[in-house]
Length: 97
Image 1 (tube, helix red, strand yellow):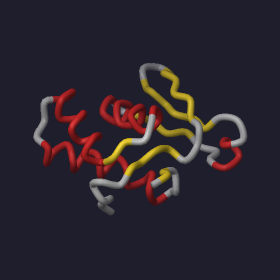
Image 2 (cartoon, helix red, strand yellow):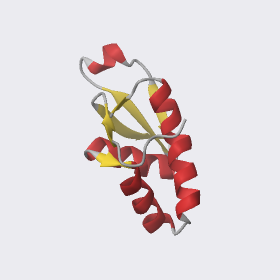
Image 3 (cartoon, helix red, strand yellow):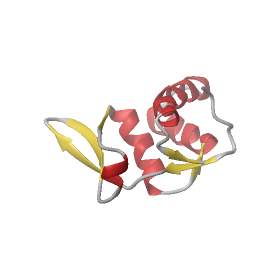
Image 4 (tube, helix red, strand yellow):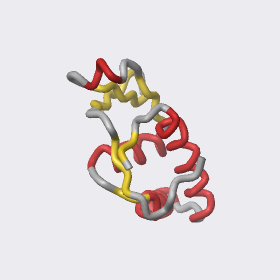
């Protein structure tokens, strides 16, 4: 499921990210934990994207651009990575648009 490029995105719930045994995981905190009672495992690019969403209102173009800059990949590849990462978030209603 592709998102519109100019739509601003942010996380619907407040999360804390911790490193457990070398893996970053995100857990909803406070009352948000009642709404999303799960844990999200993040690889390095997922951790990077997740922090962009956590730190503010960003659009798809900004995320792709920052991923291209950080990982020296093509915009096409970065777009695929971002869409693949965001798809479960969209399906599980974890994004504010």
